[in-house]
Length: 184
Image 1 (tube, rainbow, N blue to C red):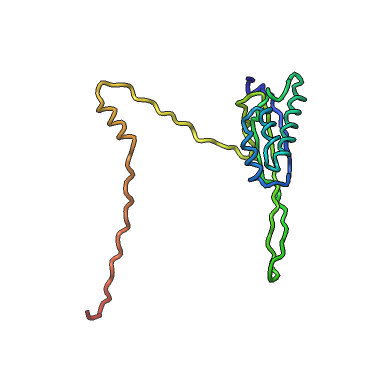
Image 2: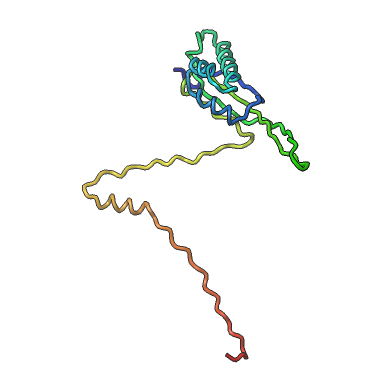
């Protein structure tokens, strides 16, 4: 296996194919993380209509990897590191209906990306956010308390960890003011 800095990475992108992202993801999820030769065989014999386009796309990604590294023998040395299906533009058409109405027909498109690598564990950092820095929450590690002879100190530290929240204070109720000069 190669190091992630020196891993051979090749990609192929199929833009605006006329299939819905939901249908394409069903097929792409099958081959994600598989060896490239196994994925090619799976796509070749899959029943879904989009599988033929995905087969051609994956074969293109393998050919791109062979062009980058001519010493690569065949697809069995590569893994499908990433397989992404994104939504493309939507063609909007109208179907005539009764009483002069028109129903919208949405013809969806997909953008499909295959990334192959010789490192099985390769993952890119994903698409770059324009102008935004993604900050992750700091990782907090729990430190185990040292072993003691008595169990009482350990139990007291566990009770301190679960602090109770104080109940909210209620506002004082408004007093009804009786009108002066009225007989009761």
